[in-house]
Image (cartoon, rainbow, N blue to C red; front, side, top):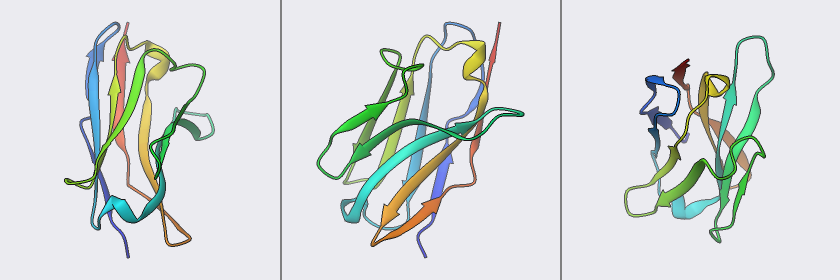
Length: 115
Protein backbone atom coordinates (compact mmCIF):
# COMPACT_ATOMS: atom_id res chain seq x y z
CA UNK A 1 0.00 0.00 0.00
CA UNK A 2 1.41 3.35 -1.05
CA UNK A 3 0.91 6.31 1.27
CA UNK A 4 0.77 9.87 -0.02
CA UNK A 5 0.96 12.71 2.48
CA UNK A 6 0.35 16.31 1.47
CA UNK A 7 1.62 19.37 3.29
CA UNK A 8 1.95 23.09 2.76
CA UNK A 9 -1.66 24.22 2.63
CA UNK A 10 -2.93 27.21 4.54
CA UNK A 11 -4.43 30.66 4.38
CA UNK A 12 -2.94 33.24 2.04
CA UNK A 13 -4.04 36.56 0.61
CA UNK A 14 -4.84 36.97 -3.05
CA UNK A 15 -1.64 37.49 -5.02
CA UNK A 16 0.38 35.43 -2.57
CA UNK A 17 2.18 32.13 -2.95
CA UNK A 18 2.13 28.68 -1.40
CA UNK A 19 4.16 25.56 -2.02
CA UNK A 20 2.48 22.20 -1.62
CA UNK A 21 4.46 19.03 -1.16
CA UNK A 22 3.42 15.40 -1.49
CA UNK A 23 5.60 12.76 0.11
CA UNK A 24 5.28 9.19 -1.11
CA UNK A 25 6.06 6.14 1.01
CA UNK A 26 7.95 4.51 -1.85
CA UNK A 27 10.28 5.86 -4.49
CA UNK A 28 8.43 8.00 -7.01
CA UNK A 29 10.86 6.68 -9.59
CA UNK A 30 8.40 3.77 -9.78
CA UNK A 31 5.45 6.03 -10.60
CA UNK A 32 4.06 6.33 -14.10
CA UNK A 33 2.56 9.71 -13.31
CA UNK A 34 1.81 11.93 -10.39
CA UNK A 35 -0.36 14.97 -10.07
CA UNK A 36 -2.34 17.42 -8.05
CA UNK A 37 -6.11 17.68 -8.08
CA UNK A 38 -8.36 20.09 -6.24
CA UNK A 39 -11.94 20.16 -5.10
CA UNK A 40 -13.71 23.36 -4.19
CA UNK A 41 -16.93 23.33 -2.13
CA UNK A 42 -19.85 22.20 -4.24
CA UNK A 43 -17.67 21.39 -7.23
CA UNK A 44 -16.19 18.28 -8.76
CA UNK A 45 -12.59 17.32 -8.25
CA UNK A 46 -10.45 18.61 -11.10
CA UNK A 47 -6.92 18.09 -12.34
CA UNK A 48 -4.59 20.97 -11.55
CA UNK A 49 -1.25 19.67 -12.80
CA UNK A 50 0.48 16.40 -13.56
CA UNK A 51 3.95 15.13 -14.31
CA UNK A 52 4.89 11.89 -16.03
CA UNK A 53 7.79 9.56 -15.36
CA UNK A 54 9.51 11.19 -18.30
CA UNK A 55 9.10 14.63 -16.80
CA UNK A 56 6.38 15.91 -19.10
CA UNK A 57 3.98 18.28 -17.41
CA UNK A 58 0.37 19.22 -17.97
CA UNK A 59 -1.64 22.05 -16.43
CA UNK A 60 -5.24 23.12 -16.21
CA UNK A 61 -5.81 26.25 -18.26
CA UNK A 62 -6.86 28.12 -15.13
CA UNK A 63 -3.43 27.72 -13.52
CA UNK A 64 -1.07 27.92 -16.50
CA UNK A 65 1.65 30.48 -15.93
CA UNK A 66 0.94 30.61 -12.19
CA UNK A 67 1.51 27.06 -10.91
CA UNK A 68 4.52 24.83 -11.42
CA UNK A 69 4.68 21.10 -10.69
CA UNK A 70 8.02 19.49 -9.99
CA UNK A 71 9.40 16.32 -8.46
CA UNK A 72 12.35 15.39 -6.31
CA UNK A 73 13.06 11.72 -6.91
CA UNK A 74 15.69 11.55 -4.18
CA UNK A 75 13.17 12.79 -1.62
CA UNK A 76 10.20 10.97 -3.19
CA UNK A 77 8.21 14.18 -3.30
CA UNK A 78 6.12 15.99 -5.84
CA UNK A 79 5.67 19.69 -5.33
CA UNK A 80 3.26 22.33 -6.54
CA UNK A 81 4.47 25.91 -6.47
CA UNK A 82 1.47 28.21 -6.58
CA UNK A 83 1.99 31.88 -7.33
CA UNK A 84 -0.39 34.77 -7.92
CA UNK A 85 -3.09 32.93 -6.03
CA UNK A 86 -6.70 33.92 -6.55
CA UNK A 87 -9.76 33.39 -4.35
CA UNK A 88 -11.03 30.89 -6.92
CA UNK A 89 -8.00 28.72 -6.16
CA UNK A 90 -9.51 27.99 -2.76
CA UNK A 91 -9.99 24.23 -2.48
CA UNK A 92 -8.75 21.04 -0.92
CA UNK A 93 -5.72 19.94 -2.91
CA UNK A 94 -5.09 16.22 -3.33
CA UNK A 95 -1.98 14.39 -4.40
CA UNK A 96 -2.51 11.58 -6.91
CA UNK A 97 -0.12 8.90 -8.09
CA UNK A 98 -0.09 5.80 -10.24
CA UNK A 99 2.15 2.97 -9.15
CA UNK A 100 2.22 -0.46 -10.84
CA UNK A 101 -1.22 -0.02 -12.39
CA UNK A 102 -2.93 1.21 -9.26
CA UNK A 103 -4.10 4.71 -8.37
CA UNK A 104 -3.49 6.28 -4.99
CA UNK A 105 -4.73 9.46 -3.31
CA UNK A 106 -3.59 11.52 -0.40
CA UNK A 107 -6.03 12.86 2.19
CA UNK A 108 -5.73 16.42 0.95
CA UNK A 109 -4.55 19.78 2.21
CA UNK A 110 -6.73 22.87 2.40
CA UNK A 111 -5.74 26.02 0.55
CA UNK A 112 -7.73 29.15 1.32
CA UNK A 113 -7.12 32.35 -0.62
CA UNK A 114 -8.67 35.47 0.84
CA UNK A 115 -9.61 38.48 -1.26
